[in-house]
Figure (cartoon, rainbow, N blue to C red):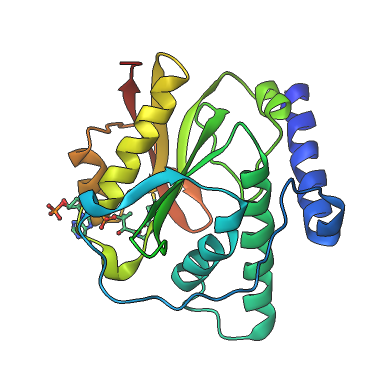
Length: 225
Ligand SMILES: CC(C)(COP(=O)(O)OP(=O)(O)OC[C@H]1O[C@@H](n2cnc3c(N)ncnc32)[C@H](O)[C@@H]1OP(=O)(O)O)[C@@H](O)C(=O)NCCC(=O)NCCS
C-alpha cells in the first residue's frame, strides 16, 4: 500500500512538473511541436506501408493525429491548448524513454498513418497521460507488456493498418521475453470488441470505470520466435 502511494506521489509530481516546467525536462533531440501536417488523401493498403520505431522527429505528427481524434469536441481555446500540452508533453516523455516503444506506420511520402505504444506497466493498471519512471511502476506490482495509444488516421481505417500495428506490438513485447501483452479498451465499443477479438485478445475480468468509460482488460500470450 505504502509502495503504491509512493508511486502515485511520483506520478503526481511528474505530472505537475511536466505541466508547469516542460523546459526543465531534457529531450535528447530537438523537437518542433507546432507543425500541423494536413491529412492527405487515401492511404495505400497496410502491406505497402512502412512500419518502424517512432522518434522525436515524429512528435508533431503524432500530436496532430491525436489532437484531430480526441480534440473533435473541444471548441474553446483553453481546452484545445490544454489537450495540446497534455499530448505534446506526454508523447515527448514517451519518446525520450527507452522502456516505451512508439511504433509507427507511414506512407511513401513519410506521412504518419498510425501509431501505437507498448511499454511495461503494472499488471491491471490503466496507464496515465504521463508515463511513470520504470522504478516507480515496479513499486506498484509486477510489470507486464501493455499496449496503449493505438490510433489510425481516419481515412486509412479498415485496411488492416490497426491490426498490423498491434502485431508489431506483439513482436516487440515478445522480444522482451515470454509474457502476456495486455490492454484496456472500452467494452461498450463493438468495433473495438471485434477488432481485438479478431486479433486473438481475450479477457472477462470485472469492467473498470475510468473517466466515463467502462474498460475491460484483454490479453494475449506472446512468445519470442
Ligand atoms: C480501432 C482502430 C485502431 C482500428 O484500426 P483499423 O486500421 O481500422 O483496423 P483494421 O483495418 O486492422 O481492422 C481489423 C478488424 O477490426 C474490426 N473493425 C475495425 N474497425 C471497425 C469498425 N469501424 N466497425 C466494425 N468493425 C471494425 C473489423 O473486424 C476489421 O476487419 P474487417 O475490416 O476485415 O471487417 C481505428 O478504428 C482507430 O484508430 N480508432 C480510434 C482510436 C481507438 O479507438 N483506438 C483504440 C483504443 S483501445
